[in-house]
Figure 1 (cartoon, chains in turn green, red):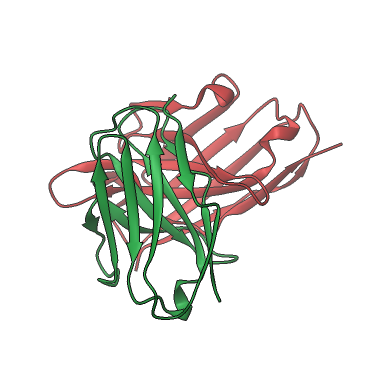
Figure 2 (cartoon, chains in turn purple, brown; figure 1 turned 90 degrees about the vertical axis):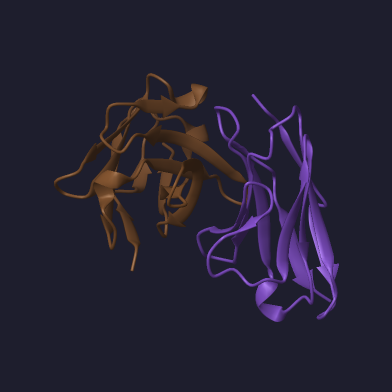
Length: 107
Length: 123
């Protein structure tokens, strides 16, 4: 199975700041990577697919980048509604696997 | 508006069975592959199973192969997960999810999720 190592596990930042979350795959996943946002008590929502394609309706302050085994999610101009957990998912190969998540809080 | 509404969860004893349902609306159900994804309490997400749009192909994670069965009834726009020989480690919230289609390609990632249904396996 492809292991997804996500960091950091938690993150605290101020409103308006830029934050970056990283995901490392145990082998090359050829940009088969998605990012999800999960707000407390809610189901996950798709943010990014194909490593860097913004899903419909997602604010442009979210962006994804990376290739090979290293990927990142950047959130510009952090807003209060961005408080959530963020997960990466590889879909290059079965079984599809998720990162362990990053909990983002506002300072 | 796309809606996925799960039902059928609850408390079940180890070794027993449970069947989850997911009623879909707001899109052409028989055009989409569907999946179940679970999340143990305070834990991360785990893909469980996927079924093709016509039910002809199914895929499972190793830990549920031979115990869980994913199926669908396109006439009723409903997805199912039959869970047999349940174990304590199956305790989780189970989400029904639609696989993503960008207009050209289908991708094994999930663009719509249900609200989730809790399954607790305990004696």
